[in-house]
Image (cartoon, rainbow, N blue to C red):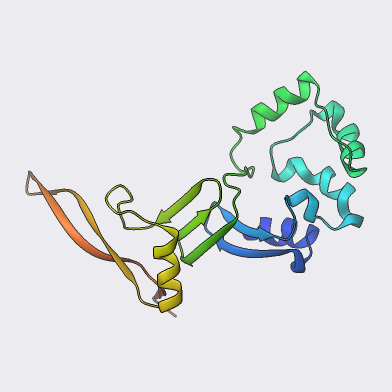
Amino acid sequence: MLQFHYDFVDRFVSRDDYQLCEMDTDSLYMALSANSLEEAVKPHLLEKFYREYPQWFPARSCDSHHEEFVSVCSRGEAWNPRPCCKERSTFDKRTPGLFKIEFVGDGMVALCSKTYFAFGEKSKVSCKGRNKNLNHLTKDKFLSVLKTRESGGGLNKGFRSVRNAVFTYEQERASLSFVVVYQTEGM
């Protein structure tokens, strides 16, 4: 993720045009000053951006038509992929290691690692250690934690195996945390 952030985003997009919101080992959420990543790219780097695009994202053209793709997109024109290009794009969408857009929205409340609420036409929520089906998590709950600096709680239910017997449990957890402190041993 750091390589993508520094070698791609930071290189092609001015720091005035994006704000990193949340990053994990396999995802990066950022706010853009433009409607899309492509619109936020520094104009003098557009050709290089499109040339390197398939190294980071599912290719939008096959190798045979890549130069044409770079030329058309660098001029700001719409790319009309041929069937071979669509086939390559479909294949690349299943390729591990390439970045795919998972969510586009209007805003995000990111409290700490793996705890965020992204909103727009649809919403996307992540709350480590809390059962989303039992707890109605809303943008307002996340905003309240952010504004008051007081953690929010919720209920978890599950099964636990103890000495060859299975039990159900209910647990109240403070899982909408304002601050998470990690301790590293050996420092």
